[in-house]
Image (cartoon, rainbow, N blue to C red; front, side, top):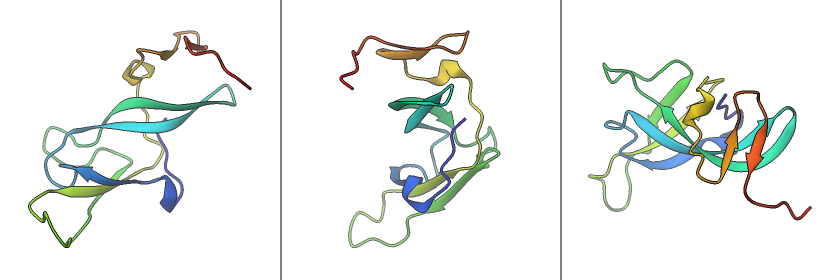
Length: 109
């Protein structure tokens, strides 16, 4: 589940997010069985086939900028957006079908 409960946990300055993107790569804290497994990337659908925001996704244009106003930057907020575990970009870390976090990286703490 992708969730951004605070202003600081929202995703800011997402290029092509305000008008054009259907998907976003979201780097998010990964909590598995109550344990924080660090930040991992996920592929998250943000718009449906009709370009409407998906359930739980709020998309806002970043507004007027001092430069590069032709670039469509967005602010994204996620409210309990369910995604399949297969949407984790899992080259290094993964969550198994049994719900276990696996990593090739050794923890130092």
